[in-house]
Image (tube, rainbow over all chains, first blue to last red; front, side, top):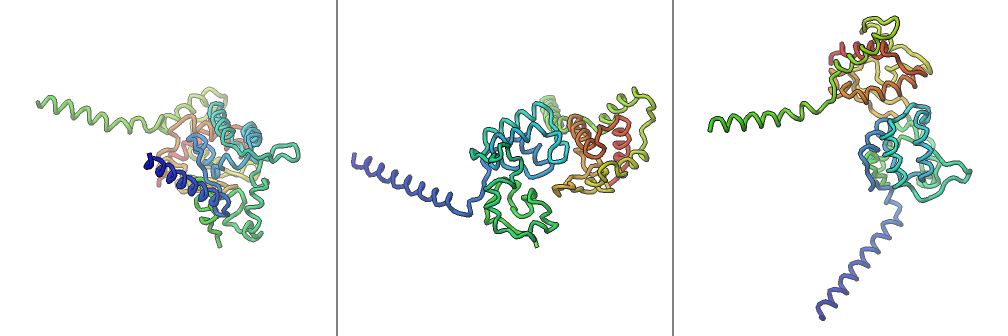
Length: 161
Length: 139
């Protein structure tokens, strides 16, 4: 019996220690966005032209708006067959951000206009954005060396010279 | 005994060949043949021409864009997306064996890219000319 109590106490202590570490890691500035959700069709279709932006970077209403206008996708025709579009939309909705961004009443379509993007990039100078190697704030992989795998941890950022 | 070995050998050879047979849905020649059937039914059809295809590929159409804006003037080389800088693998089948081996993919990209570059879908004649040109490219 005593053994069981000891064991239980130890387990609780371990669990508490782990959750403490976890909350520290989450509050840390270096946790970045790490993709956990995955879908083969989303990955292959979206990454054909750009980094497959993680679903958690926009709320569901934004993804729905983007997916319903793929024939005019930021100036390009990115239309998909109906089956692919509905599978990808469902995946994006399921893993979307719970935050609401539509202060203007319209869903935001650009990740770069979200508050989290702006605050995370507030230290980035205008010369970095103008660097031809960066070209556009949509080009995550220019600085986030692991963007392709959905890892946006600040420790892996390498700003091109 | 010999027969068993022989049978086993044939089965193994068959298994070894399976991935090769199922790797690609179509060959570029089959894709081209599909466009030829489509084009032949349209008025003014001319036999597909690599020269016309090359000219179409390199000519700037609308928005100052051509196929070669992203795919470069050398379809055996790597290209780059004009907006996002994403690397585009070579378009010529000689340099990239995956090209023109999946009709669904071919249709998807012709529709998208023609809409971007010409503000309309390409005709079967234009698609056939371009593929004919791409098939003349060597690495």
